[in-house]
Length: 113
Image 1 (cartoon, rainbow, N blue to C red):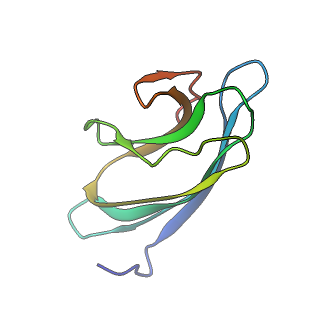
Image 2: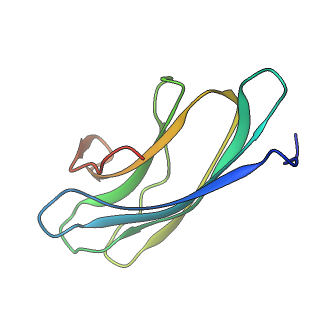
């Protein structure tokens, strides 16, 4: 489904919650009504690792309370990865950036936005 006249967008800039934020994300969330009171849309942007601390940065997308969608993680320091997530019929989609170690442990997450 393509964006329509009822489309909207918001820009989100997030940093992880550790003392010297080691991860950041710059995202755009676009959505449009699909005729049934719910929304279709997409999340696009980048996630970046900004510290040489063996932690990697990763974006989590929560779509109507469904399990998290995890983006590829950015690691080591200086690496940026694209963020791309599409949703088809949702009431609420929120995002956050976290640090992950070995692709398992997740910590120092930003607020949900």
